[in-house]
Length: 125
Image (cartoon, rainbow, N blue to C red; front, side):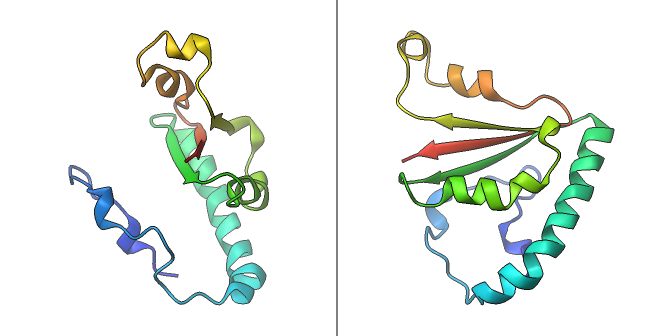
């Protein structure tokens, strides 16, 4: 699977309105499940080890969709294979009263992953 079109280049401005919200490529789901997922998980495990060893950057993965759109299933089936010590899932639902007392970005900043860690933001739209 060629993911090069999804990669952001350093210093490049990204206009999310230019990206489709639906899958715009032909994908054989059976092939993904039976072949590509296992290969990708091994790659992700290797990259997670490198991220942790480098201890220079954190990684944020944002899953945004309506409730019951499969975000939790994605976390369970894909990210559950990573080392759980280095992965934290944070769900952003209706803001609490404490969160409403701060600016919008306060709860995002509070949930950012540390260096060498991966943060998965589960956003309900």
